[in-house]
Length: 261
Image (cartoon, rainbow, N blue to C red):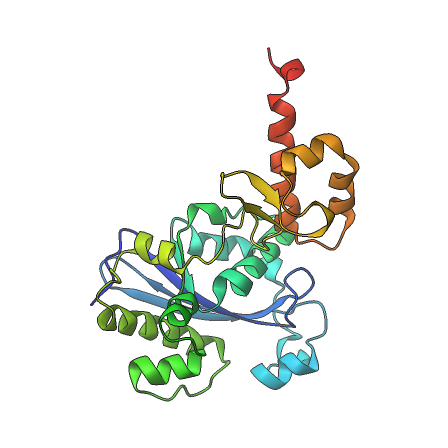
């Protein structure tokens, strides 16, 4: 069963210096852009991350500091990549928890506008875990009856993710080849920011999801403890979390009666 696309769907995968969304950097990005007419465009790009690649990451990906020392920085190609993702939906494997937040962080550091909220996101791992609960290599074996060669190569993982999603559509009658349905099905959280520091409660209110104010409405905390905003802005939180918190704060300030005409 082929995907029904109303706009391009970009499958992508990252190889990075480590596993911290806020502190690590991208060293390799591969994407496979599938267009509504079935045409495909793929590319792999490597970057000098500007920080050392951890030994653990090099052991997994095979990419060393020497391999990328002469590559461009992400910021040099950020505008070009933003165009690739512009007006597209996004798909990946474990992408909502890691690849998407880290990609957004890199765009923010580069100062390039990239509104992730405009893209519907499909996390193929979530569909797999809801249905079978395993890893990408196992998913590839299970759904496609193939062995995943060059696992942890961004290009191999990206292509495998695309093939797994198509096989999932063939296997499960309740899955429709519709991006909106797949994005909703693969959504695991009610996150407001990508890192999940703020979430929607049952009533649709934005509440903190960590620390001493867990479960408290963000607007209430900003009103009663304004110093908490400064603490978060200076803390080890992702740029996306800070950006979302600032947007909520500015909307709150603009809504105050004394600021209305």
